[in-house]
Length: 207
Image 1 (cartoon, helix red, strand yellow):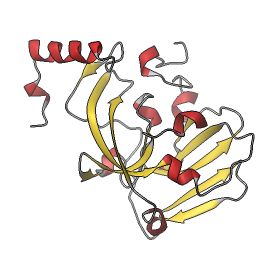
Image 2 (tube, rainbow, N blue to C red):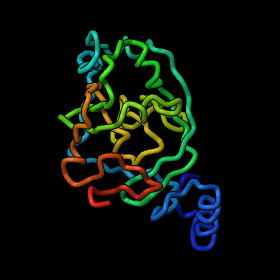
Image 3 (cartoon, helix red, strand yellow):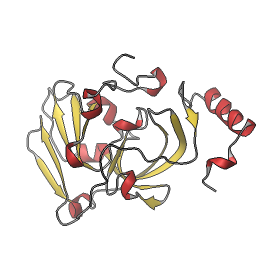
Image 4 (cartoon, rainbow, N blue to C red):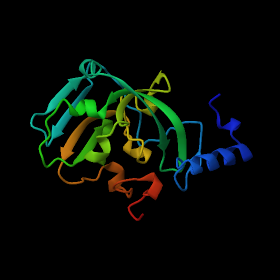
């Protein structure tokens, strides 16, 4: 049963206390079992014949993958929590997709590459330090809790960066641009924090 109604009143408070004690619930967050839909703009239409994934910037050779080629990459499964800047947290998510570290194998980075600007549909971008993406639990997800991602949750491809606020887990990803400087993305240009650590409550550029 995936409804918040099973966690109400004292049960919810007890579960949140447990998550706090385990160090899993960041300050200012509340537990949810639902998966709220939040994004800016409309849900893009996916056309597998035209979709591609591009890697550029500070790489020795740019890379372009069709949907077919991307799906040939080895798949992994991960288990992690998910924290939204709007103050809800969803625990114990199961993800399936292509590890970021697997994508790194396709390129040779130039020495000065330190940051990544993640590109998505409709011109959306988000910035993440390379070191925060080069981790075992970061992946390009195609499935969530055993089911393909729905369109409003980022199908066909969503970046998952569990240790940062969920706006860094970009929906509808279309590519990566490696940079030397930390270039602000869409939400970062509109007042959100450049890094976004939920345990430090780095929600806005004033935090």
